[in-house]
Image (cartoon, rainbow, N blue to C red; front, side, top):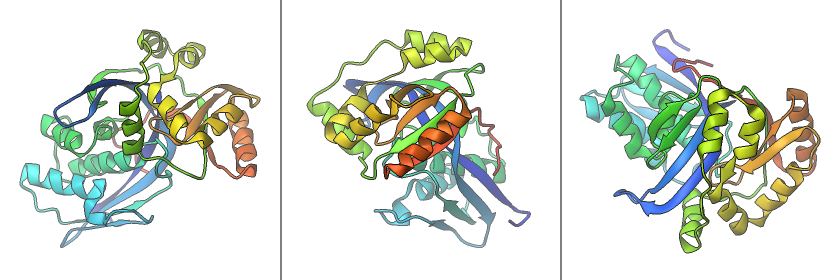
Length: 294
């Protein structure tokens, strides 16, 4: 990496609570209550100063790179501040797609963080947040991915949790996936009521892991299981594994996460899942610094 470049970790996330409502905002996004935490699993975003603008992503996308969230993030931020975006951005992807782990949103939010640092833009400037919100509902979380309670479309920060537990996590995903659009379309056809968030918020404020597990909820995950039965199969298997305190679909799926007693338990469950032919990964909840680098 050249001295005038940056290399940043773009963390995955899981939703400890996701309550989707039937009402939508002017953009067509559903109103939600969401509690998100970042994970140690991450993509890698590299930004280097250059004489032109280019984006490279190392996985196959089903859209041209010019329509990726990373491209939109860089172009939109440059336009908002009247900057010529003379940078090369490359993304090494480790977070699986169509998993509900926020990979695309994290890549975009991390790109914004890096460019703000490179271009001497105040990350807390409301214009930066507005750029993030225009790209996608979860992108603004990744500007400062601390354990957080968000409202609006999941893009309005209400509270952060400094005492959130650093819990071991195992991620298990069936080989098939489901898109966010498919999950929300299924929700619109047959909405699932949301649960109350109060108990989860109290548990996050105190850092009580057992109460976090007791109050986790995701009504969109129920829809995802209905649309893709393989997710239900993963969930049913995961909750029965030794050392797993509780399990739930993350976001719109198809990944299911399990909160584990120990890191060793998470590793053992990940190995057992891999032996069944599923994608799996042992990781942990982390409190990510705004300037974290790989």
